[in-house]
Length: 352
Ligand code: NAD
Image (tube, rainbow, N blue to C red; front, side, top):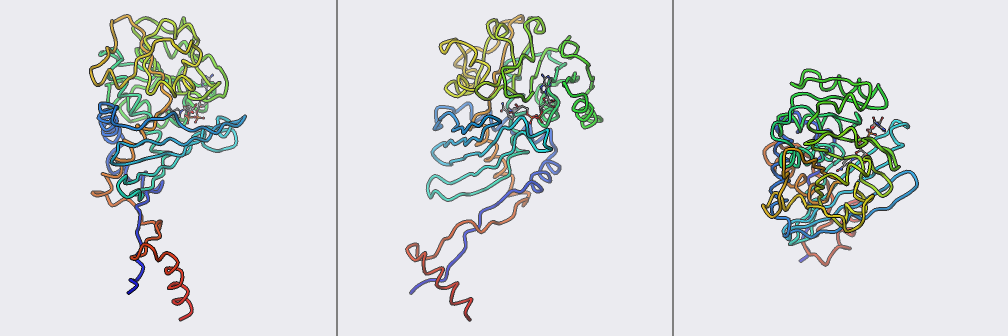
C-alpha cells in the first residue's frame, strides 16, 4: 500500500535568526566559541577533504563555492566578493551555506552566511593571532573600516586581549561608522588620519580593505620588528594589500597553500617561497613565532573548513536556542520510488 507523503523539513537560519543568536549568546562569546571550534577542526586538518575554492571571476568581482567534508558531515558556502558593490549601496561580501549528512546526503541545515562569514573570519584572524602575535599585544591598527572591521576588532579583544584599536580608512565616513559602532564596547578607539598614524605603536596590524587591484596598503617602513600582520583583504587573484618587501622579511602562515598561492598576498612571490600551514602550528608540527623581533604574517584568504566549523557550531546552537525556521526542502515520499505519486496525491487533494 502506498504510504502518505511526509515532508522532511530542513532548519533554515535567516539573517534575522542569526542576529538574534548573536544578541542572545553575546557577540564576543560567540566569536570565542567559533575560534575554539575552528581551532579544534584545524587540529584534525588531515581528516578533511580539501580543494581550493571554485571561483567564477568577472572584471568586477568573483562568485565562489567552498566545499569540504570530514567524512561525517559535508558543508559548502556560496560567497561573492564585489569591491564596487559598496558604492552602489550593496555589500561587498554576501554568503549562504549548507551543512549536510554524509551518510544520507540530506541537508541538515541551511544558513545565511553574510553575518556568519564576518564572525568566522574575525574568529579565524583572532585564533591565528593567538598563536602568532606577541603575547603582550594590546594595540591593533585596523586599516579598512568597512563591513568586517568591527567584528575583527571585537574578536581580537575577546580572544587576544586587545585593548586599543587605531582606525584608518581612505573614506573618513567608514572610520566614523566603525568608531561609533565600537563605542562603549570596552575598547579604546582612536581614529587616525593616515595609515602611518594607525600603525604607529601597534603590535597587530589588520588590513581589511576592498579593491580589485595590487594595492599597497602597507609599505615596508610601516611594519616594525615583532609586529603580527593579519592580512584579510587580499583574497583573490590580482587583489593584494601588502608591499612585496614586507612578505620577503616575514614568517608567512597560511590556511591551505594551493588556494593561498592563487589568492593570497603570496601570489606576489615565487611558487616555492616557503610558507607554514597554520594547522601545523596548532597541531604542534611546525613552529609559530620564532622570536620577539620576527614579523609574522597571517595571509588570510578564508578557507572552507572555517565555514564548516562555523556551520556546525551554529547547528549545535540551534538545539538550545530554537532560532530557525523549517524549510520544506526535501521531497521525501515514504515509498522512495514513488516520487511521482506525491504529485498525483497533491493533484487529487487539489481536485477534492
Ligand atoms: P567593505 O567594502 O565593506 O570595506 C572595505 C573598506 O576598505 C572600505 O571602507 C574602503 O573605503 C576601504 N578601503 C579601500 N581602499 C583602501 C585603502 N587604500 N586604504 C584604506 N582603506 C581602504 O568590505 P568588507 O566586507 O569589510 O571586506 C574587506 C575585504 O576583506 C574585502 O576585500 C573582502 O573580500 C575581504 N574578506 C576576506 C575574508 C577572508 O576570509 N580573508 C573574509 C571576508 C572578507
